[in-house]
Length: 173
Image (cartoon, rainbow, N blue to C red; front, side):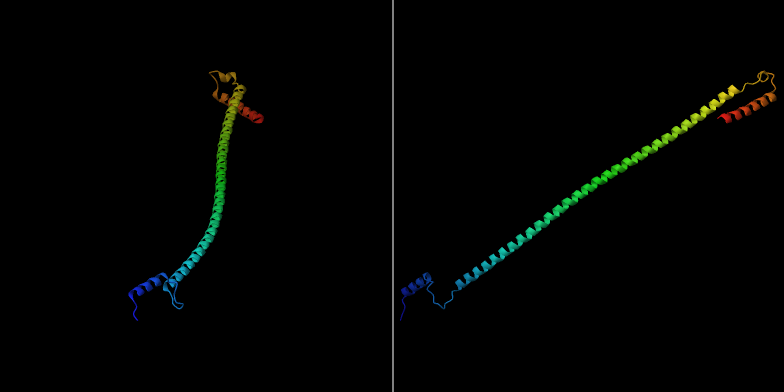
Protein backbone atom coordinates (compact mmCIF):
# COMPACT_ATOMS: atom_id res chain seq x y z
CA UNK A 1 0.00 0.00 0.00
CA UNK A 2 1.39 3.07 -1.12
CA UNK A 3 0.21 6.53 -0.22
CA UNK A 4 0.20 9.00 -2.88
CA UNK A 5 1.77 12.38 -2.50
CA UNK A 6 -1.55 14.11 -3.01
CA UNK A 7 -3.03 12.21 -0.16
CA UNK A 8 -0.14 13.19 2.10
CA UNK A 9 -0.58 16.80 1.17
CA UNK A 10 -4.32 16.62 1.69
CA UNK A 11 -3.80 14.99 5.12
CA UNK A 12 -1.28 17.65 6.18
CA UNK A 13 -3.59 20.41 5.13
CA UNK A 14 -6.54 18.85 6.90
CA UNK A 15 -4.55 18.27 10.06
CA UNK A 16 -3.28 21.88 10.09
CA UNK A 17 -6.77 23.34 9.66
CA UNK A 18 -8.50 20.81 11.84
CA UNK A 19 -6.37 20.79 14.94
CA UNK A 20 -9.44 20.33 17.12
CA UNK A 21 -9.79 16.85 15.80
CA UNK A 22 -7.19 15.42 18.09
CA UNK A 23 -7.04 12.21 19.70
CA UNK A 24 -8.23 12.16 23.28
CA UNK A 25 -4.91 11.00 24.71
CA UNK A 26 -2.81 13.40 22.74
CA UNK A 27 -1.37 16.42 24.65
CA UNK A 28 -0.86 19.64 22.82
CA UNK A 29 2.20 21.54 24.20
CA UNK A 30 0.95 24.85 22.87
CA UNK A 31 -2.26 24.52 24.87
CA UNK A 32 -0.30 23.70 28.00
CA UNK A 33 1.95 26.68 27.38
CA UNK A 34 -1.05 28.96 26.94
CA UNK A 35 -2.71 27.58 30.07
CA UNK A 36 0.43 28.06 32.18
CA UNK A 37 0.92 31.54 30.74
CA UNK A 38 -2.70 32.43 31.55
CA UNK A 39 -2.29 31.10 35.09
CA UNK A 40 0.93 33.11 35.55
CA UNK A 41 -0.72 36.26 34.19
CA UNK A 42 -3.73 35.74 36.45
CA UNK A 43 -1.51 35.22 39.49
CA UNK A 44 0.55 38.29 38.55
CA UNK A 45 -2.64 40.36 38.17
CA UNK A 46 -3.91 39.22 41.58
CA UNK A 47 -0.51 39.94 43.17
CA UNK A 48 -0.34 43.38 41.50
CA UNK A 49 -3.87 44.15 42.72
CA UNK A 50 -2.94 43.05 46.26
CA UNK A 51 0.25 45.14 46.22
CA UNK A 52 -1.72 48.14 44.91
CA UNK A 53 -4.26 47.69 47.74
CA UNK A 54 -1.46 47.46 50.34
CA UNK A 55 0.20 50.54 48.87
CA UNK A 56 -3.05 52.49 49.03
CA UNK A 57 -3.45 51.44 52.70
CA UNK A 58 0.12 52.52 53.49
CA UNK A 59 -0.38 55.82 51.66
CA UNK A 60 -3.58 56.48 53.56
CA UNK A 61 -1.85 55.88 56.91
CA UNK A 62 1.12 57.96 55.73
CA UNK A 63 -1.19 60.83 54.76
CA UNK A 64 -2.90 60.66 58.15
CA UNK A 65 0.49 60.77 59.90
CA UNK A 66 1.62 63.69 57.73
CA UNK A 67 -1.60 65.52 58.58
CA UNK A 68 -1.01 64.92 62.31
CA UNK A 69 2.61 66.05 62.03
CA UNK A 70 1.51 69.20 60.17
CA UNK A 71 -1.08 70.00 62.84
CA UNK A 72 1.47 69.45 65.60
CA UNK A 73 3.99 71.61 63.75
CA UNK A 74 1.44 74.39 63.39
CA UNK A 75 0.67 74.19 67.12
CA UNK A 76 4.39 74.27 67.92
CA UNK A 77 4.93 77.23 65.60
CA UNK A 78 2.04 79.10 67.21
CA UNK A 79 3.33 78.27 70.71
CA UNK A 80 6.83 79.42 69.79
CA UNK A 81 5.41 82.60 68.24
CA UNK A 82 3.43 83.33 71.41
CA UNK A 83 6.50 82.64 73.54
CA UNK A 84 8.51 84.95 71.34
CA UNK A 85 5.91 87.69 71.72
CA UNK A 86 5.83 87.16 75.49
CA UNK A 87 9.63 87.25 75.67
CA UNK A 88 9.70 90.43 73.57
CA UNK A 89 7.08 92.01 75.82
CA UNK A 90 9.06 90.95 78.90
CA UNK A 91 12.25 92.37 77.40
CA UNK A 92 10.44 95.62 76.58
CA UNK A 93 9.03 95.76 80.11
CA UNK A 94 12.46 95.05 81.57
CA UNK A 95 13.98 97.78 79.41
CA UNK A 96 11.21 100.18 80.42
CA UNK A 97 11.79 99.36 84.08
CA UNK A 98 15.54 99.82 83.65
CA UNK A 99 14.97 103.16 81.96
CA UNK A 100 12.55 104.18 84.72
CA UNK A 101 15.07 103.12 87.36
CA UNK A 102 17.81 105.09 85.60
CA UNK A 103 15.49 108.10 85.39
CA UNK A 104 14.62 107.75 89.09
CA UNK A 105 18.32 107.51 89.93
CA UNK A 106 19.09 110.65 87.90
CA UNK A 107 16.13 112.38 89.52
CA UNK A 108 17.35 111.39 92.99
CA UNK A 109 20.85 112.63 92.17
CA UNK A 110 19.38 115.89 90.88
CA UNK A 111 17.29 116.24 94.03
CA UNK A 112 20.38 115.61 96.17
CA UNK A 113 22.21 118.28 94.21
CA UNK A 114 19.28 120.67 94.71
CA UNK A 115 19.22 119.89 98.43
CA UNK A 116 22.98 120.47 98.67
CA UNK A 117 22.62 123.70 96.71
CA UNK A 118 19.75 124.80 98.95
CA UNK A 119 21.79 123.91 102.04
CA UNK A 120 24.74 125.90 100.70
CA UNK A 121 22.47 128.82 99.89
CA UNK A 122 20.88 128.58 103.34
CA UNK A 123 24.32 128.47 104.94
CA UNK A 124 25.44 131.47 102.87
CA UNK A 125 22.21 133.27 103.80
CA UNK A 126 22.71 132.38 107.46
CA UNK A 127 26.28 133.63 107.38
CA UNK A 128 25.20 136.76 105.56
CA UNK A 129 22.45 137.33 108.15
CA UNK A 130 24.95 136.73 110.93
CA UNK A 131 27.40 139.20 109.41
CA UNK A 132 24.60 141.75 108.95
CA UNK A 133 23.48 141.16 112.53
CA UNK A 134 27.05 141.53 113.75
CA UNK A 135 27.49 144.77 111.84
CA UNK A 136 24.21 146.01 113.32
CA UNK A 137 25.18 144.79 116.81
CA UNK A 138 28.74 146.01 117.12
CA UNK A 139 29.42 149.70 117.04
CA UNK A 140 32.96 150.55 118.15
CA UNK A 141 33.27 153.22 120.80
CA UNK A 142 34.37 156.68 119.77
CA UNK A 143 37.77 156.10 121.35
CA UNK A 144 38.33 153.03 119.10
CA UNK A 145 37.26 154.97 116.03
CA UNK A 146 39.91 157.62 116.41
CA UNK A 147 43.43 157.38 115.11
CA UNK A 148 44.96 157.55 118.55
CA UNK A 149 43.17 154.48 119.81
CA UNK A 150 44.49 152.03 122.32
CA UNK A 151 44.75 148.80 120.35
CA UNK A 152 44.64 146.57 123.40
CA UNK A 153 41.57 148.22 124.91
CA UNK A 154 39.85 148.26 121.49
CA UNK A 155 40.74 144.56 120.90
CA UNK A 156 39.34 143.64 124.33
CA UNK A 157 36.21 145.67 123.62
CA UNK A 158 35.82 143.90 120.26
CA UNK A 159 36.34 140.43 121.86
CA UNK A 160 33.80 141.14 124.65
CA UNK A 161 31.27 142.35 122.07
CA UNK A 162 31.94 139.32 119.86
CA UNK A 163 31.45 136.86 122.77
CA UNK A 164 28.23 138.60 123.80
CA UNK A 165 26.96 138.57 120.21
CA UNK A 166 27.82 134.86 119.75
CA UNK A 167 26.02 133.99 122.98
CA UNK A 168 22.92 135.91 121.93
CA UNK A 169 23.09 134.53 118.37
CA UNK A 170 23.28 130.93 119.58
CA UNK A 171 20.39 131.50 121.95
CA UNK A 172 18.15 132.92 119.24
CA UNK A 173 19.13 130.70 116.34
